[in-house]
Image (cartoon, rainbow, N blue to C red; front, side):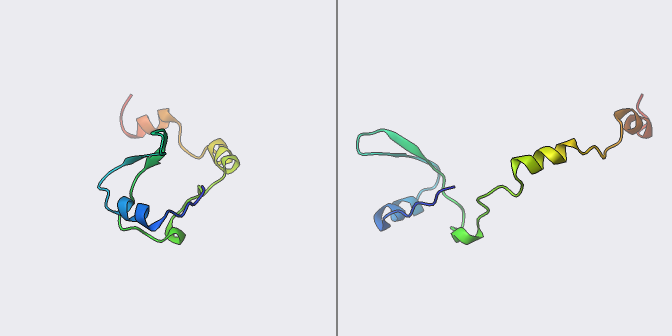
Length: 79
């Protein structure tokens, strides 16, 4: 994710938002959305990258450690 530092005047406007906003250029074209974060944490405290890569996630999906549905239903007394 890219980090963009805004000018102080814009930062002051954004700080006071109670909800989401659409950011537009001078021609009225939408640039994107802004959602304020509660408590304004330092950037270093944010987890901006996913904890696992796509490849790692796919590998974890292949691992089957659960019980078969029939066994679970049997243990619950449901047939």
